[in-house]
Amino acid sequence: MYHDDSSRGKDGVVASDPPPGGAAEVSLDSSAGEVNNGKIVTPRSKETRKRFITRQLGPIKGTLTKCMTHGFIDLDPLTLAVMDTAPVQRLSGLLQLACCRHVYKDATHTRFQHSVGVAHLARITCRSLRENQPLLGITDVDVACVTLAGLVHDLGHGPFSHMYEGEVQNRARKKKGCGAPSFCHEEASLMMFDFLLKNLGLAENLEELDLPLKQVGDGIDADGFGVKTSNRPGSLTALHSRDIVFIKECILGGPLPGSNKFRGRGVDKEFLYDIVANRHSGLDVDKLDYYMRDTQHCIEDKADFSLLIKEIRVARARCPNPTKCHECRSSPDCPKEHLMTVWPRKLVVTAMNFFKKRLELHKNIYTHRKNKAVEFMIVDILEMAMPYFKPAKLKFHSVLGAASDPEAYINLKDDILTAILFKEMKELKPAQDLIERVNSRDLYKFVKSLPMRDDKPNFERYWNMDEDEIVEGIVSAASVQIDSWDVIVEKLQIHHGKKDKNPVDYIRFLTKSQVVDLHDTPLSDLPEARKVNESEYQSHIPRTFQERTLRIFCRRGNR
Image (cartoon, rainbow, N blue to C red; front, side):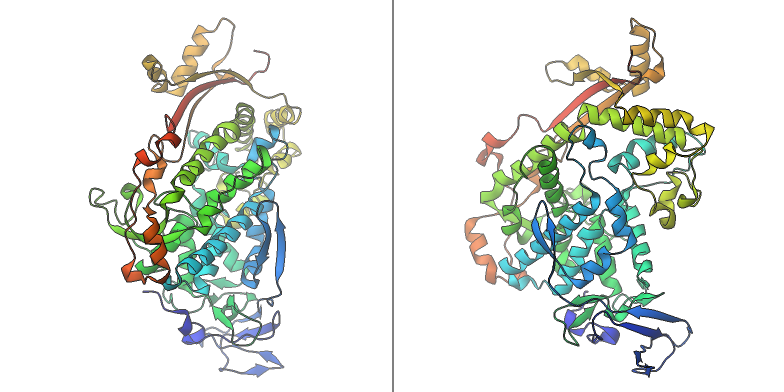
C-alpha cells in the first residue's frame, strides 16, 4: 500500500532543502551530514565511490506562463525542472496536428503546448476533487505526480503525430531492412521519461519503491527532487520510486508491462488514474485539452468543457468497460466495483456533447481530405527515404529504428523532411522530388468517397475487401491507363469514442442528493454511481455513433 507523505523523504524523513537553486556535491561514500569546503555532502552508498555535482530545485516564485487556451498557468519548481529537460523541449518540434496546417493555417500549435495544457488541467482537476471531496486524502505529492504525468504523457510521439505509429509503421513492416520495431507512443513515452530522469541524474529503484530516487549522475539532488510547499528549509517532500511508477501508470492508463496490477497507488486512490488517461470512459484531461485547443486553432472559439472539471466527483461504480480493464477483463460478465471519476446527472448532455466534439474534430480536421492527401505524401516520402537516410544525429538508425534508442529518438522531429531534402544522396532523389511537390502544393488528388449506408447493404462488400483488391479493381475498370501505384484506397472509420456504442453509457453519474452529501463522506461510505438511461437525453443522441467511408486518392495530379 501507498505510504502517507508525512513519513516521506530520505530514509523516511521529510528532506530538508538547501538554499534554492544552490549546488551540492553528492558523495556516495561520505558520512552523514559532512560538509566539504562549504558544500553539502549527502551519503548514498558505501559501495560506490562516484561523486556527482548536484543542484536543488529552484525557489517557489509564482512563475506564470500565458496559454492561448487556458489563460495564465502557474508553474511550480518541480514542473519547471522537468519542463526544462531536452525530452520535453523536443515536443516543441512536433506539430500537434501534423499536416493540418495545409488546410487550417493557424494549426501550428505544438505537442509542447498541448502537454503544458494537459499538465495544467490535471492539476486543477486534482484541486477540484480535493475541494469537492476533502476526505479522499489527495496529497500534494499525488497532485504533483498527476501533473507530471500530464506533462510527459506525449514524450513518445514521433514526427507527424499518429501517422508515425500508424501508416508509416504499417508500410515498413511489409518491407525488409527498414528497421521497424514494435512501437506505440505510450510505451515510447515511458522510455523517454526514463531518459528524462537520466538527464536529471536520477533513476527509479524498483527494488526500493518507498525510498527517494537513485542518484546516477550529475543533475538534481535525488533527495531534493520533490514537492515544495514553501521556500523554508524542511518544506520539501522528495518523490519516491513508487511515485515514478505511478506517473508511468497514469501515462498508460494501466499497469506497467509485466504487471497485472497498479503499484504506484493502492485501490483507495485508483480514481487518480482516470484523470490523464481514463480507461473506463475516455473522458480525461488529455482529450479535454486537445478538443479545446484544436477547436480554437481550426474552427471557432475554444469548446468550453470547464464544467466537467469543476463538477468532477469520485464514487463507487461497477466497471463500465471490463474488456479494457486489467482487473476485469478475465471475467467481463462479472465486472468489479471501482473507485472512479463520476459526474452529476445534470451533466449528461454536456458529456454527450464532449463526445460529439470528438467526431466533429475527426471529420472536419483530422481526416479532412486535403490533410489526408498530404499525410499520404509524407508516408511515401519516409518510405522512399527509409532504407538510405540514416544520419549521424539519429545514430545511424533509420527513421523508424530511432524509436528504440532514446538518444537517437530525441533528435527525430518534424524537421526530418528538411534534413532529407538537403541530404546529397542520389538514392533520395525520388523522396526529395515528392517533398518539393508538397512544398509547392502539388498534392495528391482526392477522387471519390463511398459512404457505407444502412440503405445500401451491397456497399458492405467493398468494405470487407482488401485495399489492394479494391485498387486492382479500380485499375482494371479505369477508362484511362493508370498503374496500381497511382491509386490509394483509404478505409475511413470515425466515431464518438466507442465505435458503434454510445460513449455516455461508459460514464457513471450521481443524483443531486448524492452529490450534496459527498463533501463530508469518507472513502468507505461513498455512494454508488450509475449509468443514466438514454431516455433521459434521447433528443441529444445521434442517429448513429460511427461513420465508415471508402475514399480514393490519386498520386498523379494529371490523372
